[in-house]
Image (cartoon, rainbow, N blue to C red; front, side, top):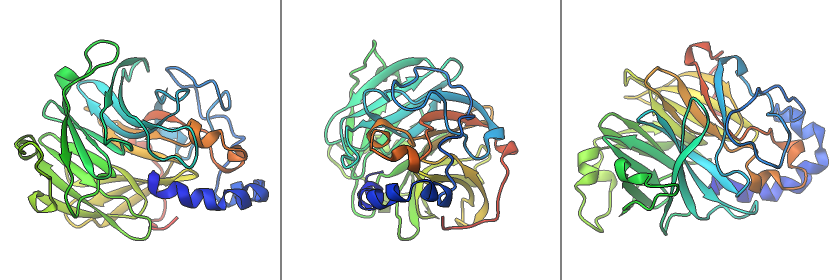
Length: 327
C-alpha cells in the first residue's frame, strides 16, 4: 500500500474537519459494529467489534489479522496445505510504508497462529504471497523471495533458507496469485490499468543465483484494473478474481483470464488486500483497514472502517452491483 499513503496524508487534515460528511461520502459507517465476532487474538486498540462490511451475508469466517498490536500491516494472503498464509510489514506511523517483513501461518478453523518467519532485507513491503508446488513466494516491489514450505516454519519463529530474486524491468511485485503449477506477479496502479504476468514454478526455481526475473520469461499476461491489491484464479482457471480497494472501500471483480474483460463486480470490505481460494471453493481475503499505523492517527475512526481481519466468504452469496471501474 506504499503507493497510496502519501496521498492520504495530504488530505487527512481536511477530511477530518469534514467529519461525518466524509464518512457518508465514502459509504463508511464506522459506528456500525455488527461485523460479527472474530477468532484469534483481538488487538488491544480500536473498537471492541468490527465495522459492518458490505456483503456481510456472504462472510462465513473471520480471524483477527496477526501481529496487529506489534504494528504489522497485512498485505498478501495465500492458502497452503490447509493453512492460511498472511504476508505483512511492520510500521509505526502513517507516513511509514515499509518495514520488517513477516509471513504468518494461521489455522482457518480456530484462528490460531501456527507459525511465522521473517524475511531478510531488502524486503520492506511484503505486498503479495503465493503458494504453489510446495513453495512459498513473497513479492516486494522489486524483489521476489522464495521459501520451501517444508522448511518455512521450524519452531515458534522459523528461520528458513530464502532465495532472493531481483525483479527486472517491466515487473512490479505489488500482488501475487497462484495456480497449481504457476505463480502470477501483478502491479498496482492508481492512474490506470495494471498488469499480471504468470511464471511456471519450474522456471522460477530454475533461476541461477542473482539472475533477475524478467517480463520476457512470462508464460502468460493479462491486464488488471486500477487499485488492484490481490488476485486469485477461480478453481476452473477461467476467471481471475481481483480485489480492488483503498482504506474506505473495497471491490471484488471477476475478470476473463484471457482478455481481462470485467464480468462482475461486488462490494467488499474496505482495505481489502490479498485473496485466495481454498480447496472447498471458499474465497479468503485480508483487510488492512484498521491496522495500527493507520488507525492510531487522530480522526481515523471518522474516516475508515475497523476491519483488520482475515475472512472467508461464499462467492455464490455475493450480491453483485453494476460493473464500474472507478470508485
